[in-house]
Amino acid sequence: MTAPFRYDVVEMSTEEIEAEREVFGGLAQSIRELAEASLRTTIDPEAADQVRHEIEALTERLRAAQIPGSFGVQLTSGGTVRGHGNAVVGLRNPVAVPLEIERTGDGRARSEFVLNALYEGPPTMVHGGVIALVLDQVFGEAAADGGTPGMTGTLTLRYRKNTPLGKCSAEAWIDRREGVKTFVRGVMRDADGETTVEAEGVFILPRWAREALQRHESAPPRFE
Image (cartoon, rainbow, N blue to C red; front, side, top):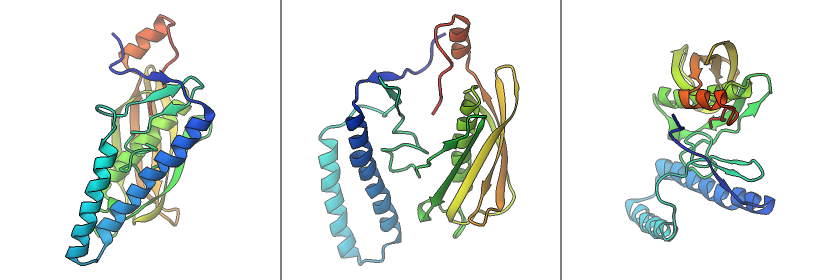
């Protein structure tokens, strides 16, 4: 059995990688800010309609040259991961927060970030589904950091209290391993450092990766 996806290798210099981060990462950030401004604006309808036409014109400029389908994950020949379409950490994905995740090297991962009005569920609070999205990514990073990457098998959340919009943090750590399964635990915290959500997940090394390891054809892939 082969992997259901593949990582393409692209040739990019250090200068090109930095330029991509500055220009296209900056473009995505500008669109994030535009989205929040669109949500919260109180300008009159005539002005809003004018802005809409301006945005449509800019969209056509961007669509003049684009890749087919999704961005996927690419690797540069120097080992840089280009998972820029990721819905949580994607550099070029305006839907992403995006998170900057810190790994400790011993099976732990954490991140501090801001969830603004775009991520609202109950009034002034973070949507529970957004919390699950964030924790799934951080949990996966913890599993990979411990040397046992895998795909999410289960993710169970216990919402202890509402998470206010604004500054938040998430932390995850490997609890134990059982064969191809890695059990991860973690929390979501609010701006005051109080735990709002506790969670646990199981990450499973897929069959195709196990078979590749048995054949000594590759190291286990890192899932972003």
